[in-house]
Length: 223
Image (cartoon, one colour):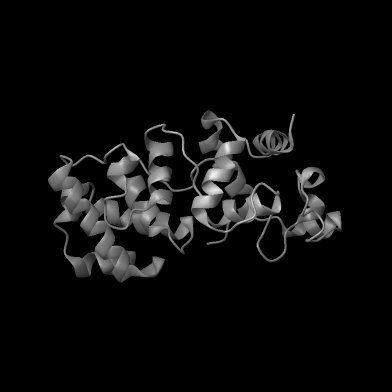
């Protein structure tokens, strides 16, 4: 078994519950929550979305929303003015052009306001079962540390990682790597001495080596 496959298998054993950590019930909620999650934490987005979707449960409702009311609700996630423009705009497009249903293809999704390839792949993989690589900040960081790619460009990382794994592994691989990045392989001080995949990682010397001190660095995602 090659190094990428071993790391993927080990992360699967380490994080058997790995999944998208946005609390959503349907493709529309996932799309909106993913747009809101940019430069925010999932827990904060979840808290905001509970109120947002109680008030505006579908694309038709959010398309007709009062902008100031939406801004007040989503204010805690940051960049709320731009995000308000995006989620109202995408809701209007979905309501007007897609009969109120989130489209299920990459080409259609990326035409919506505020939706790029990364957001589209999150929705496709988790709502429609369509394989895709989500090059978020954790995947980009860890893919470089694992030696899978030497670039921080999302499109380069997406292609390089995708070539290492069969498509049926892409969605869960991303969840596992993201969970590992949030909990162990931190940007500033990775817990290398307590890392389940350290023995196969070419960057295993960059972080805390003492097992006890490293274990203390492992944490659940912050609020």
